[in-house]
Image (tube, rainbow, N blue to C red; front, top):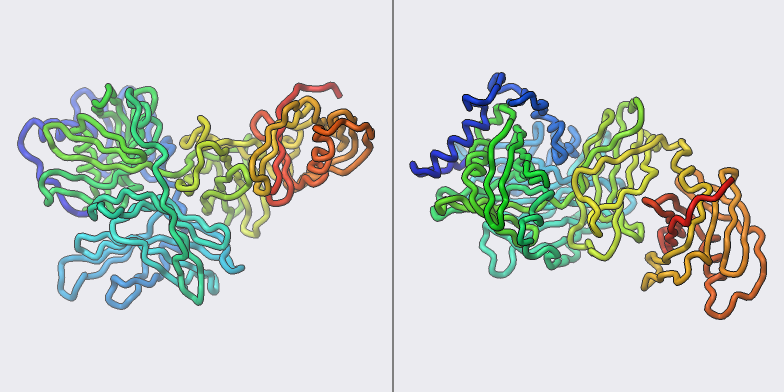
Length: 565
C-alpha cells in the first residue's frame, strides 16, 4: 500500500503534476482560501463546501457500518506473532519479524453484517491483512456478544488478493459476495464473480458451498453511457514496470462516479472532490475541480490517485470492471463496480432519535427474500446508507425493493418506509436514492390505498413456480374504505367485508358474496382464497401488493382509478 510511483520526466509527468496542483488549490485562477490539513473544501465560484470526514454531499460516502466495539475488538489472526490482533480504531500493526522495519497491518473493512445463526444473534466481520509481502489476505470473523462486548468465536480465510463486494446473514448462513481467481487469472487480477456460503458448525465457520456467477453486464455501450452513474472503486495500478504497481488494500476509500451532466465526483482517502470529464467513444479525460485538502497519513495513496486520474486518456469496460488507460502507455488504473444500493434516509419535519438507535436497510426481491442490506448505529436524520447485495443472485427479469426501519435500542420500530422504492433492475436506480420514512404509528401510508379500485394483475411468490398474469384485471377488484370496510368483484360476483392493517400486518376477513357460477375459466374462487390468506401488504409504487405469510403467494394490483367515498 505504501509503494510510490516512479514517474518519468515527460509530458505525462507534467500533466499529472499540473492536475494535482490544481486539485490542491494552487491554480492562480482558483479563488481558494483553505488551510492545508483542515477539513474545509477548496472551492471556486462560490461552490458549496464538502465535509471531508462525513462526505456530506457525496452520495457514495461510506456509511460507517463498523460500530466502535468492532473497531476495538480482538480477532484471531494467523498473521500475527501471538495469533491475535487487538484493533485500535479499526487497525492493528506489529513488526513482521523481531527487529524488522516491515509491518504486519490488520484492518477492519466496511463489510459487516448482523443476523442470526443457529438461533443466536451474531455479527459477521471481514478483516484485511497486509503481512508486509506481496499478498493481501481477507478473513471472515464471527462475533457474538459476551458481557456486552463482541468476542471472536470462529474465523475462516477468504483468500489472497480477492475482491469483497459485501456480506449478509440470511437463511442461517453467512453469504460473502466476492471476486476470486479463475484458473488462468494472475494473482493481481481476480475475475470470477462468486458467492461463498458459510455455516457455523461445531464452533467453526465452515464453507458449505460456492456459486460462480456469469457477468450480467459484459461489454459497454458505444457512447460510454454504461460507465456513467456507477460508483467505481479503485483496485490497482499496473504498468510495464512491476516495481511501479500499486495494490489498493482499501478500495472503498478511493472511489469515482461519472454523472450524466459531464461532471464527476471522487473520494481519495480522507479527501473528496469533483470536476468535469469529457467522454467521446473510447476516449475519457478528466478536468480538475474543487477538492478537500485534509492530511490523510503517510500510507495514503491520495496524491497518487489524483495524479493518475489526471493522466487518463482512454478506457475499457468489461462487465463490472473498468480499466482507465493513461496517456503515452503510462499504465492502467483498474476499478470494480460497487455492488451496493446507496442513498439517504430522510423524514418530514423535525425528528429526533434516542441514543442507541439503529437503522436497518434491507434489499428484498419480489418473493420477500432478503438479498442484502446494512445495519448500523445512527444518531439522527438524514442517514446515509450503503446496502451491499448479492450480485450473483440478481436476475434482471425480477423486481427488487428496499425495506427500511429505524429502531430504538430495545428493538422497537420508530420509523419505516411506507412507500415502495424499487432498485437495481428494470430501469430502477442503484445509487443516490432519497428514501422517505414515516413514524411507525402514522396512518399516512395506509391512507394511500383508500378509495381506489385496485385491479388484480399478477400472481407470484415463493410457492408459485411460474408467475401468472391475470387476463382481465377489471373482473377482480377490491376497494378499501377508511372505516375498515372493503368491497369489490370476484369475476361475476360482488364481495364485501372488513379488513385490518396494523403493525405491518394486513388481514382481509370473509364477508358477504353473491353466489353466481362464473364459468370454468373463472378465477373467482382462487381470488377469494388468496384474499382471505393475506398476511401483509400495502402500496407498492403506483400499485398495491398483498401477500400471504412469508411471501408464498403475492398478488399485485394496478390502480384502476379513484372512487368516491
